[in-house]
Amino acid sequence: AQKVTQAQTEISVVEKEDVTLDCVYETRDTTYYLFWYKQPPSGELVFLIRRNSFDEQNEISGRYSWNFQKSTSSFNFTITASQVVDSAVYFCALSETSGNEKLTFGTGTRLTIIP
Amino acid sequence: DTEVTQTPKHLVMGMTNKKSLKCEQHMGHRAMYWYKQKAKKPPELMFVYSYEKLSINESVPSRFSPECPNSSLLNLHLHALQPEDSALYLCASSQDKGSWRTQYFGPGTRLLVL
Image (cartoon, rainbow over the protein chains, first blue to last red):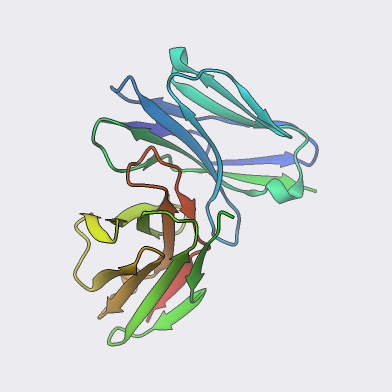
């Protein structure tokens, strides 16, 4: 069965520090997709990134970067030079393609950026 | 434009009331979803509509009744709810059905059942 673990429940860092949010997943499929979503206090889940299991290239988007390592079943998310607006709950999610119609979410990491 | 809108933003209702939540998207997506999210928990899937037909019902109690009048609209009719149904209700849409599709979420409706 598929599973996503976000071991860090809450993280607090001072503004401008870098922070990495961990995501470890379990799946038996060879083809799967991984997602990161941001949920600010307003409640909306904001899509950040989707990666498929065949694309292990790391990705950078501005201050955000993602490190996908199949060998350790991890898809970690780093925010460089954090800002107060980055304060939110971040969810990692997994999708299999073998007939499962559901996204499996991790329990989320609450990130607080201290000004 | 990746916008999904939801109304109302907040809703307070008694256990005998009937109310409806509304969701709209204009991205041409053919799959729409309802999720329920309790505080400090991840979203839980309730229903999936694909091409305006109910595709998945995650064993949701009948006091929640979904409706998809057309490809852009999704409603969730509420009747005889319980206080434990208080939660954030999120609507999402994707290009097509399939959990590998990127889902775009609305801002949610915060529901309080008294």
